[in-house]
Amino acid sequence: MNVNRTTIFRLRQRLHETNTVSDRPRSGRPRCTTQGQDRNLVRNHMNNRFLSASASSRQTRGRNNQLISANTIRRRLSTSGIRARRAYIGPILTQRHRHQRTLWAQEHAA
Image (cartoon, rainbow, N blue to C red; front, top):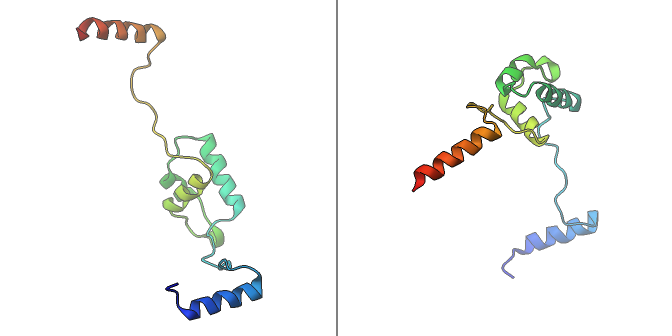
């Protein structure tokens, strides 16, 4: 099978102890924001769509009154389904404008 005997032994031992061979949860690094702060971040960005993550990071404090990085805010917004957007810069076209542009393009295409 090309697997070390120790690996098989440990997997059998884990199966016997926990009834599963999947990894156990690990503690990991504690989050710098609470769930309530995450909800407030999302609410603020939904109310003001053009607020940047860096501007929001300057205004927001995390646990123990520490600053939160802009990347952390981007990750929190991304997990909530909010993606960065830029406002459209250009002329506002009505249906009549679009029709006239299409006619012009068809006229000059040939």
